Length: 99
Image (cartoon, rainbow, N blue to C red; front, side, top):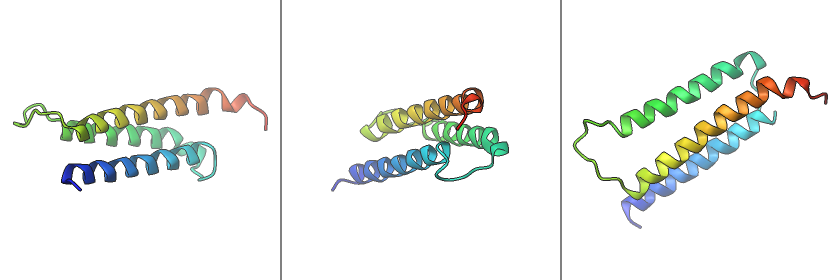
């Protein structure tokens, strides 16, 4: 197995794990206090953005985009979208649904 393929496999598995954990938190399988949802969302966005900035620093000498880089960009974008949409649903729709 190639070194890049191993990194891609590890990255993909970690992203899937984080997505599953995030969905579990959103649906209440894992519990986070309601007061911390906004802070949790902000921290997640900050961590993802800092990761992307560090990984794709424009002054870095290497500018070749690899298969791993494409996956990183795609999964980070989908995770940020999931984060924004789920927090908006949580804040604006769920309070009006009677369970």
